[in-house]
Length: 125
Image (cartoon, rainbow, N blue to C red; front, top):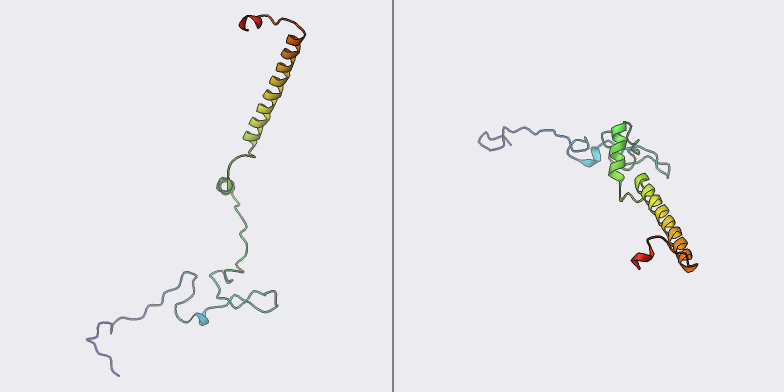
């Protein structure tokens, strides 16, 4: 069979492009294998990514290293702030105010029951 120059794709050469994980296009069985030891003791046969391991054996993230990366990670993980330092301090302060106001009300009630007149208080009753 001879090539016909008039065919639309006769001069087009096949490009070799890489897939997203760095493996060549074509038969997936020709892709490099992960090779990590499984719990069974055999090497993993999943296709390897660019780092040489498959998606299951690629290794855990080491996490952010820089101060800005750590701050970004903290902000990304922020959910509601219920246990933040500021909100806990505000709750402590409010509970202290409530406790002091209850004690003050109890003292006033005791003075009223004992018949002691609080100056300026009886005028408003």
